[in-house]
Length: 612
Image (cartoon, rainbow, N blue to C red; front, side, top):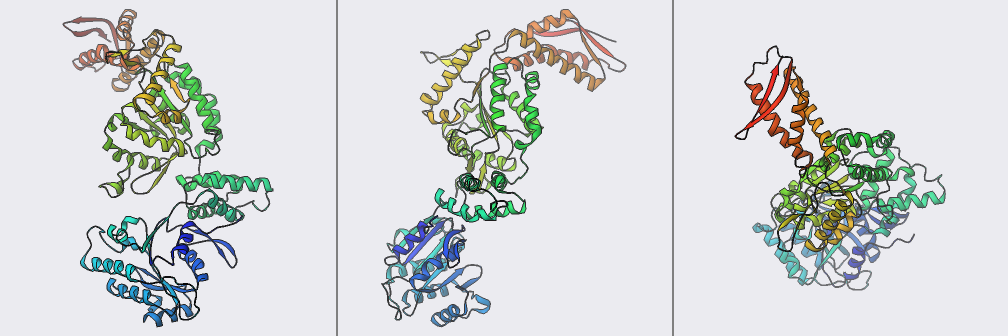
């Protein structure tokens, strides 16, 4: 495979005849594929720069950084002796500490040097000032001198060797271009800006080919397996640097991972965990037997449970996004739970967490009503660089980095500000998000769950909210109207059909609970009350048949609010008056509390009970 020079190096070579200084920013700490005498290798920036420019008759670099001062590159006797003579240096221990004023003098000598081609590299230039917008007197004088020098310098031809005129350049290595005073690059035509981006597909492929022999089993594998390994390695590292590819190779070697385990090696680098819950054998068995367990907790939602389990099985098999050329970085699963309030949407998310990760509290929940304003995106995703609090990261990115294997629940997604919803495009497509600190959170091992009540209420022609579907409507009607309302919301109200397209057919519509299901929920809640009495007072709770029926009728009269509405009614009609009477009763020696009747006078409910 032919290896070409990185674009920034090619641009540097092309511009050496007309530019005296270069601001190099971006991925300056990455590695670069560079032809050496022994073959192509991954080397740091300084080595890549040296290998590129030494063929243009450059004899050495002077490298300055604020910590160690000035040194010569390459660290060879001939280069050091030449640099010390030309620049009157005393490199004690290989380095010479110097002030900005002395460094400014070195820059002047460099631009006027006619004996040998050389360059000055200002490494860690982002750390040369404390505050780039508030320069000290010495700092300001230094940058003004550098600007003046960029305009006054002239290209040179060495006295020995000849060749075409080229500058002895000054190269500023920066994390971000804005780490230098803005006027420095804006006001000088002789300063060129070079941005080092993340490696593209072809570059990563070349690096993967270079690193492949270091993986166990590669040498013995057939050609087809080798090609597949390189393909998986390249596609799985999209958005990563070549240094990251090297680190992944090192992790694989230490963990004894072979070419068949490349996905595990990449995931280990991204999320910091080699153990993968999605690959556990017991998980498939748990999901195979999960339907009765889920339907015991989420009652009356058979179609929703079946579709959710189908998507979960797809996640476990690693087939999410399999129809795309490269879908390995997408979240494990995406679920959009829609339907009436109180019918089990959040409960199903908790149940999924319990099923996959063994603890329903392991899910990450974000109430999107808290992010209704645009500025709250800084809280969720991290403030932009330079703004107050950017170094704290975002609640979402921090939580996913802490728990890379999790269910992430975004409750009532329609209440979030549309600008915040735009961020989900990147999560759904690429499976990653970078916060203001520059740290990337990977969502490739998460299940994303969105919940919404869209479609239950709609606006009529007069702009009034009216109920679109009601308890008792056929499930097909509820599903069709809810799906239509979700489509209209994203396409016409938000004008973001692309977000709906990313969610795809993962919309799971919940039905209203029926009277039969409501009674089962009611009985379950009564059992919870009885269990709490037993735990708190060692007392058995008994209800007469007449009282139970009267209580059931009151609690299930209106099913618009689902199981949550039943619970609210039970608390108001039963738990509150029960607490009142028990509070006034001496419980010592009581074994059973039997409730036989209910009365209401002036909106005050009283219970008839016997304590034995």
